[in-house]
Length: 315
Image 1 (cartoon, rainbow, N blue to C red):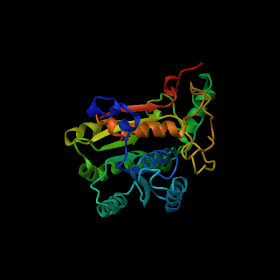
Image 2 (cartoon, rainbow, N blue to C red):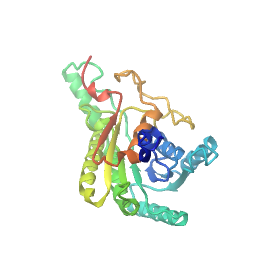
Image 3 (tube, one colour):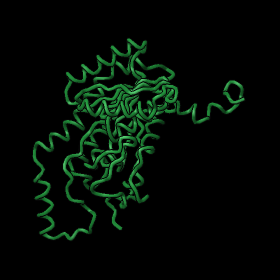
């Protein structure tokens, strides 16, 4: 006897708790890095996942790789990846993507979506590693810091804020109608915003504008979770630390794992002594996306190896 109805503990099994089979998800920035980890994890466990991105070649590559790794639909519990080209900074492009997804869902006999993962984002130029060495407090150091901060152009600032703040805001709004269609008492549809531990770091990670943009994303999660709570729609936030991704490296990608070699750190400054692994981000996504999370709304999961407990603390 393993089922709840017969008095067993089957309802506490990992398979039951973290089941995502039959769910429908949309993942922005789903062709690489954290978005790819999330999309692969969901699709491999039975969810229908639409991955959005600007580059059709990278989207197609992500789908082809997934099908190569898991060619048998039974292996993935009939989960799948579907590529949808879209620009999250354009309302017209988002509307078009939503309609294409809606049409495809109708053809499959599905109603709405259950999960929207707003993952797309950019980091911008990596400035000096503030706080990595003890500050001298002298005039030369002050001028160096000011000069480097001032070197950040208006367009660099605009690009980060337009993608990370405006883009995620527009994406969250664009898919509300499909989330509403897919919601139910058994599973309240939700948006999962991928922010960053940089949202609360007191020294810049990559650059100050990136930190600011991620603070906005985390706050957006709190606003949306409050505004739509009575409409059976949820919003939760994941604040990852350092993981191999396009944002942290320009090195080639391992298409099977999404792994990259980090360009500016190996994670040695993180308390656990390494950067995050794809499966660790995937695990957080699987929990929030699963039916086990239905009581979570406005929750924040920070998965960063304890980095924020140290930044900007000194040795």
